[in-house]
Length: 600
Image 1: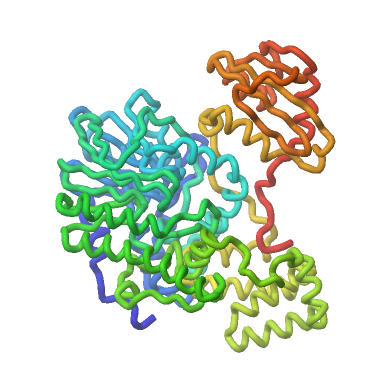
Image 2: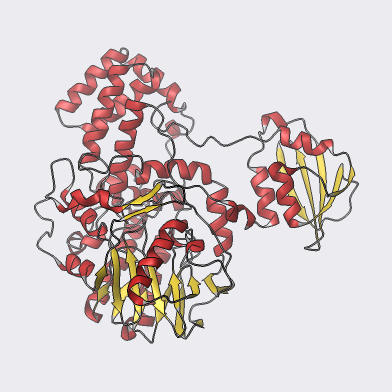
């Protein structure tokens, strides 16, 4: 830790540059008076780093906690510290174009109000979504009700919707542990998320784009603001793009280059990202835009000014993802497993001395495992790992072999005394899974998780450890993050609606059901056939007639959504057995929003 470049104050100078004003108090509330964002809760980060935090993470938290309206360059402003992400505003001829309107409508509205208080009551004349993660579009209805150009990268809607609907419940649950919104903001608790402070808990919205960016080099002008786009699909998001403002000599890097090492696979879950492609996009960005750029900024953190500094920043970010990719491939081809690679890969000295390459959000450890997973999957090739018992059953057997729960706790105490907290956690995890009522094991494991969290440089690791300790001490911690609103479900395509049904079918309960429904979408001029057999709900668009369906429905897209949300068949033209719908609903399962993560 003594070798960390704490003497380098450039980030603090950049984070404060262009400051105009802060929201005071730095609190955002819902219409019901509930606090959805409280940046003032992080005022403790102005103090010296205590023993309960990693100095590097404390430094990152202090930087990310800066809040207010900032001038990036002439005509481009950012509001930072009012959500996990930044909202950027590019002034046009008649109003202002908003880039990435945060997670919550309440926070986005507060950010726009702060901007207008100092730059005038300019109307929102356009919106740009840089990518398909909710912290870059969820607050859109806080800045506009629509009726303006909204630009997004190709594939945006598909990925924005599926991430929040298909695996949404599980991701949302794990995000509570990753971002730690339920933890107290304190030197002992949550001190940020590395990428920002945490997630706001207000209303999430979505207005579909009016136009897609489909190729690198595409130019668009909105309210006199000229933009040139670079598509970067498969890097930080499956649909993403950088935005160059040639008239302002400014480059928006979306989330492709930020002031931390990012995730190849976030702890909340997602599609595994392509580190190789990520690095190549950054090389391409240097070639396309460097000569015309005086300032580079992203949808998180603070900008970088000056051609030489921008070139170094982007080159090091590029080298970071290329190195993680290539070294993982080199070592897996020598026979090392993901866990083994994670223990031996070290960043080059130059990157170790670059704060923006540090693992405050992603980490070398879990990023190389993600690269391994992308190429080889979950199995490491050892037959002993091919058919292991699930965690609880394995834990019961391990505890039995070690002589019982008391013996496991005694072993764990020995490893704690030797400061091997990692193995102590493994042992105590077995003790807790084997017997959830073992209070001594639970309390000791909570203590170990707390110590591991306090020592973590990575914010998301810290939050997971501390949330794990909280679950052990207090039981299941309810989800506190915002939930997708009606906009997300209204944005589902017909195919995605049927997909969302398919993933809810309780397979064993539906094994012996056989049913077929034809859906004639009268407003879309399409016909779909869905069938349930062998527990699988499958769909086919415009099928050939190969027999009568059990039920035929003629309805609109809106009636389809209403029908599946429980509004019934009133007003829907139908032919056949309407009991088929009841039989289908009877085999649908419901996700569990607040499942346990660290107890069985």
